[in-house]
Length: 447
Image (cartoon, rainbow, N blue to C red; front, side, top):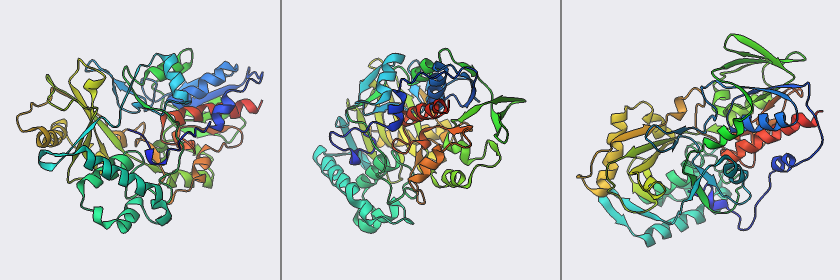
């Protein structure tokens, strides 16, 4: 699953400014200075670890009963089901690559070309037909922005230019899995900015023992207070006051590293109110929904391929399956996805309803005699009060400066981290990590 594959620049790997600053060796001590980090996701933990290494007194306040934020691994079925990030997207010079090795996270190369595709009625789509259409799709993605309009979505412009694909199920699969999954709701993604963001080169790898090994590694030695939901941040005085549960704590500096969805919901009150530019950015940058579903069986009945494709009538609905057996040979499991509005709809459905919809697709692919699954695990990201969405994207009305406005500090007291604040690497785990290092460096530079 090569995120934003259509804009990969051969041989070009950009080193983020925040990564460069993280390598500085200036001899600075934060002794006597206090920092509160709101949120123990990868961005908050990265900031806290860097600041503690410089001698700051750092406390991390986390609303949940564990660290990691959207890096969450469910092991209830005996294998880790990564509910949030699963892949390292481009391992060359990606900071997550080195971090994963230090954390003991094992990975497996996922080959995008190891794929089989079925149309409705279980009709096999030939490899040549799939590849030819895929290449034509990527060619369009490279140039569609030339027809873009600041007031029009990707979906609108695409079908204005290529109406012949409106009822083509294979092309709707590409739109769903290569655009909506990677970027956001097709009817909300900007037709001008859908190709923004940089990538690291190299292969794609998926975590096999749990992405949460990374936040657990970063959390080692930090003062983290779990089950502490922050409700207010008051930065009107010399010290910043943070209200959490029934307490008020204060610090010289505060880093807010909650997801964009939480900011959109106004779950944290800021006193005084956030500057207009920052609030506008919160409103304008999109927050998408991508839900994941893991199913297990006693025996496997599917193709021995890494990826299984199905082209249904309803868009964004269980059209892509990851063969988990490829990297967990003793386990018969598939992972599938639901995006955008259909993804949100699944959050209103029972497990039995979800399972029935998934099995309807699999039975159309492999016949009515295949068995029901033994277990189902699922996510509900859009209604999760600790996230309210999966990751940020460039929506209609978004301007790239909005990501910088989201990252802007206030009064050298209040700082903001998270994937939504990283203009080059938004919507990724490595973007979140880099943002934490960036904000820590800002505080260090004030000494």
